[in-house]
Image (cartoon, rainbow, N blue to C red; front, side, top):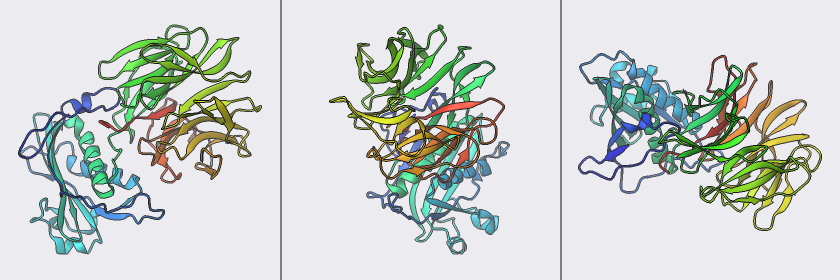
Length: 453
């Protein structure tokens, strides 16, 4: 992605959007105007923050080419859906006002008196034009109470990139009004069963733009993003053994990095991106946790126990590791301190079978899949083994949790409809939303880092 201000050029920015970078390759963002010291309107850490009422009317087609793709309503809807899912905004139905009162795009064109009756505290306006399979979009955010311009941008991209444009502006709105980065440009990689095989697929965080990443006609499992989203580690049986691979996303190149006899599974990147924790079965076929240095390929053994130790997950500070072990009989979640190899169990009393831990980006919570009454549900617990919460309930199994990079959302798989699909929800378990559809089973989602961060 290249970016330039209204009056001067600035260095190109690298867009590390998941899987293929085709979506962002042609996107040009210009015209960023913000106050010198942006005001934070929403305290995202407040325990009971009030949702900001915001209205996003259909965008205006200012070009000569008809809106055959129905971008006017579609782009407004994408931004509205993003903001509503955040849990911090309440979308006001634009239909309560006549179209004539909602055609304003700039501050001088907006009919502020009419807008005040909606109760909106913010408004997003948009104008676009389509030409030669490209779309040019102007988007603005206003304080609807004060009638004040807050922020605006122009984007240019292919028609297929209209969703990315909307996700990007929604992230800009989130950042402007909360002071925290938005995650609407992120993506999710998951495993899909296709026939008798399992392959890796990618989709935007909301399930759109789904595409296939591997065509190995084999079993491909356990995807894990590098911290900068430039690489994807995963296990595949493509050569007959469950070996560990790296996919370099920008180049589309894949290399094998661990092919020890036995299993090479459940990779997880260290916070600095220099190492990968994984599970190997080098000694007597027993599963243990190891650390693999990416450059030297040197292995360091982390656990040494007769029981099965699997599924390592680094803490954000790189000092600890959550993992699953059967050393207490049934699978439970443990935390290992890397410096001295001390181990302590953190799941007690809630479920006899707990697996798939994932450490929150802040380091204050660990989510996992736990079985109670014969069903798996997503649970959350502090690293000190306190403040337990069950986040899902009801029919079906809910498994494979993964945090969003900002720690405010969780993706997981669930077969609550009879077929395993990918879902997302807020970190407190609210707003559960299915994002994949179709006839094939989907599992093991992993959320990408925020692009460019």
